[in-house]
Image (cartoon, rainbow, N blue to C red; front, side, top):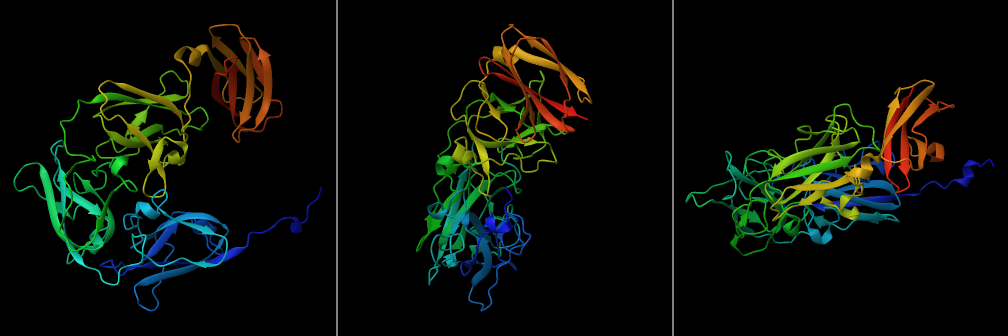
Length: 453
């Protein structure tokens, strides 16, 4: 049946006006911008989602309220404002009005979003008081680096300092009485903020805030007058006061890459358990038995951590992108994505983590015996006309064989096979990459990649 263009409905765009009040921010950067997953849907623009610095807002009447009107199709979106053009100048959206650490928007008609104060769920107060705030962090369990610092969305509101938000290394805490508790006292405008401590002056030395006391992966601070406010002393990277640390244990990470095209640069794991944190191409995983499951063992002090897997050092700069929070194995990253969550608090023995499928919370539930019960060799690979499969198995029971293309479509299938050696003809397969999958009667699958030239 031939369908004309009239059979397709084109999405109706709606005029959406974003507004943010920057009157509590001192100083305000040269550019106030907005970033979110709506950017690549804006009519007439070629923006990419979650790209800071390109979607600029304007304060035409100099009242401190910045605006931007765009056309968007109906749908649900997430976004946040930035007091600048780079990540690190973005607001910390309070937990009361955030989803995945971001503001949310549902578009179904023309709309003007109510004015919210930067980094707040509410309008800016008409009178903003200055409050004396003392930050305190216990570093007793840490080997302290060159400086202990604190960074957050409050820095731009620190009176008389001239700091920019989320700038590490400039807000320094000191420990004059040498008791391991570092402090900083500063005057800050009233408002809702986020922050975290750093055992150093650069990102990568920042603490991993446990999920039990985190908002958007950071600590939350609500400042209301008259003050002064003494923030309770927390242990670095903890919700509680310091207790003697447990001895480190070995933790083995495992990821199943059988459904992925593995980057020639290798598979890596990274997270805030590293020092410095989140170095994406440092901890390379290995697949010693060529079963498609990559492993890496790290020595770690029992605590709560976040991590992700990376398919290649350069070709996969952001690593896994799945919504691990919704799927049940992670938390928001605070910058529009998600991380896997690892809680080994109180653990005393070495731990082998489940085999997670790459970019998924699904696990490969295969025993060691079953995993190799239907292993096979494949040669030649790549091949032009035909290739041979030789099974290495512990029994002679029936199995199914499939060839699947990179979109997941089964292009060849045979069931109830028992041969140990099978020759596969090209049979009109186009050049490209495929997956050969063998499944036994228990549902255990073994997969190998094959290239048709």
